[in-house]
Image (cartoon, rainbow, N blue to C red):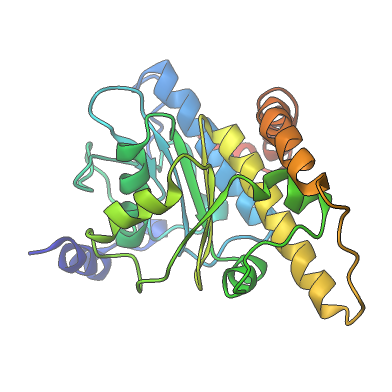
Length: 271
């Protein structure tokens, strides 16, 4: 049985959420893993808060340190607003759960995330969305345009990957990794957006910038007015500033503030 058939069978056998108990893993996993689980669960909740989720069909992941390349994915049958630190599923490089779990994972999520986690030592977090703005920009021939400061801050770090269908073919992983290269953001053409980070917070803030830039671009292009292009050379200067400033803002300012916000909104993610 191939992985897709296995997932389809798992979907058919999955139990409703109200019949599934999710025991806390706090104290049952290493403190390092628990902190990563907290961050990733908070990121899922913030994606839901910003309205970036697509029912249950996109995915955020985080690698667990160690030679095994285990990483965490969301349970396929939970809304992002329901994801908790303990419900995240730890999978191996074949996509198999490492520990017993009542949940299944998204096969497309495994294909995309396993490719990047295995290929890039610095890819400790990977996030992928299907927002309307991100999909709209992914359908533009020129991709992300340097129309706003937000776009210019991240545009130099954006790569592109051509659409090949729903990402369940493991053969796509090699091409995905090659297209990403050393960059930390990607527009999956005719599909959506993706970012990479050295940790969950850095990856999320990079995603925030990319999504905001896409949203602003669609709004600007739909306004029906002549656009003001930035002065020559300014996009390149802004890109250099973003390469330095974005990780600093993410790690020391923006992500800690967002995590506090997640606790204020609904602290159940930390269970």
